[in-house]
Image (cartoon, rainbow, N blue to C red; front, side):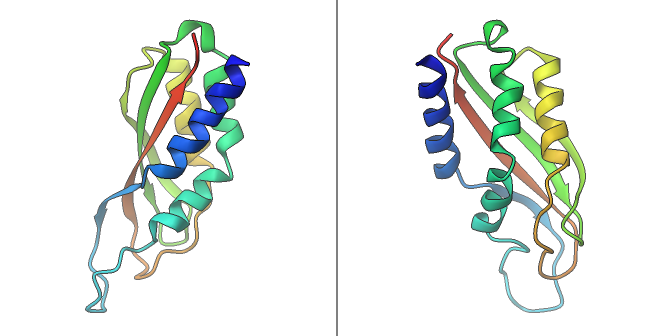
Length: 130
């Protein structure tokens, strides 16, 4: 039951937290529109939600009851993740942090408008029930 509550907490909080575009090079157009919308980023991230959960819940006993992690990653002009790092984490567990970063690194996003790579910070918040 604790895992179910944690999964529900993850789903609700992940859907409510908008990804933050850290930097994007100006495109040729005069538009200030981001290279990808929050919905596009969130949609791609949701495709890997089970893998991210597995990173956390396979090591749940060693973690605090509330996890707050921010992954910073660069989306290339083709939509692949060019690089990813753990920007902020309270897990105190390098194995969990590496697992989450590796999972994010494998996600494929839509091609961004403007054709330029850009950085995103995405927050994960879990209630593990520990």
